[in-house]
Length: 222
Image (cartoon, rainbow, N blue to C red; front, side, top):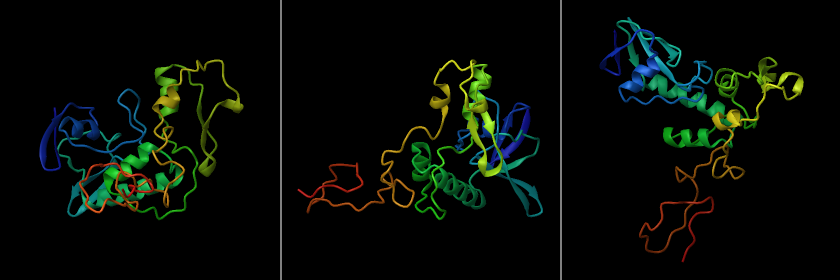
């Protein structure tokens, strides 16, 4: 067993376990997008960043889904540095896929209420979940990454549906951006805001809190 400390909690984990897995075993929640327990780790989205304390005032941010536990490790999952980095990453991801329900829900949970980057919906965050699912679970490999840099995307070879594709729909099922946000198409500066009640709300003269649901146009005045 490997002994380490996560958020001040002395923890033991089997050798080969990742920091993400060890943290979850302790009930510590670390947000993830490109991680799935049934697939190989990829470390693409960087939402699972944690701070690894290395002593003498030094530390580094590393993806917990690909970071193996080590004896004597000191891990911080919710430090200010980690929170700030995750916020910036989430802003960039939402700027690329603003209509994703998964990303908008994550923004609400983390208290993100402003996107400072230009919104350009690309429909994909390149998390690689669909590619790994197709190859590892379906043993197909019908889809993959093509292109480089800002031209990188998920596609089939030469744009032709391969014979290996069984139309299982698994790539769409596992995709974190395929499900549209509740207010997709009605976003305000890239954010849904419904879950955080960021939209103007009109209530009755005497509010009895009869509804917890707030739409984009607020409650009606009766």
